[in-house]
Length: 129
Image (cartoon, rainbow, N blue to C red; front, top):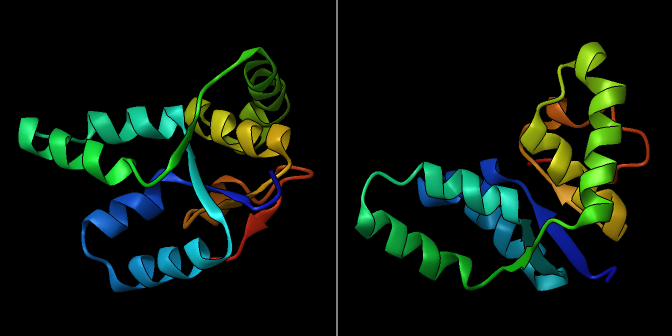
């Protein structure tokens, strides 16, 4: 699965807002790898929808992404990350799950919020922009 790339919610939110940098970067990455998201990212995006039309557009948009569902191994890794980094770095639940997904699948993560992940040992965080 090394041609897989996990995309963080912040990139997708910027794409939805028609941010040129995010759109170009996502297009660039999609030429090199299969774009995937954690199911927690899907949940974050659903929560951001204000009506059924936006939800419908989101569902259509996400058809182009592999969605990686939580499983026992990802969950355990997320818990381990929270124990290690919650108090020292303020790691949040969703970010721990996204990072754990990348770590367990041994694939890179693309996130605009570098500060949310840069301290996690072993995480292959791709520079943005």
